[in-house]
Each structure stands twice: as C-alpha cells, then as structure tokens.
Image (cartoon, rainbow, N blue to C red):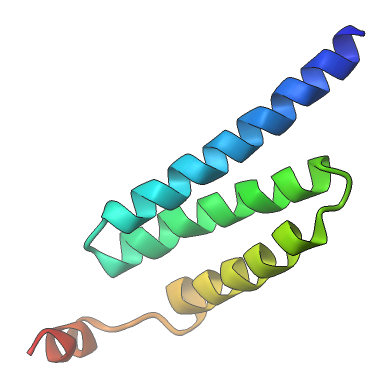
Length: 88
C-alpha cells in the first residue's frame, strides 16, 4: 500500500511541477530563460505522461517541444544582435 501511495504522490507532484514550470515560463520576458524554464516543464510533463501509464497525448507533444527548446537553446541559439533586431 505504501509503495502505491508513494507512486501516486510522485505522479501528482510531477504533474503539478510541470504545470508550475509551464506557467512561470509564460511570465518571463527573456527568451532564453523562457525556453529553459519551459524545457524543464516539458521534461516534467513527459515524466508525468509515463507515470500515467504511457499517456501518449501528453508525452508526444512535450517531447517535441522539449526538442525544439534544446535546439534553440544549444544547437542554434539566437545571438544578441538578432535579438536587438527583433526589438526594432
């Protein structure tokens, strides 16, 4: 019983953590920080999806979004000059 209850709590915590990171990412103005926080939220959503017995509608889009965030953060980051051009 204790193991089942702990697993249920871990599932809920991963879902709530994902939601918190997602909400916080929308409050950020800095695009790099927004992407980093959103990436953490996506990772928690993927964990949550797996804990819900492979909830593919949660896992698939969040995996795609996480890969997109990784691409923009580390593979092809926006340079400062490009950011300044976007503001003008």
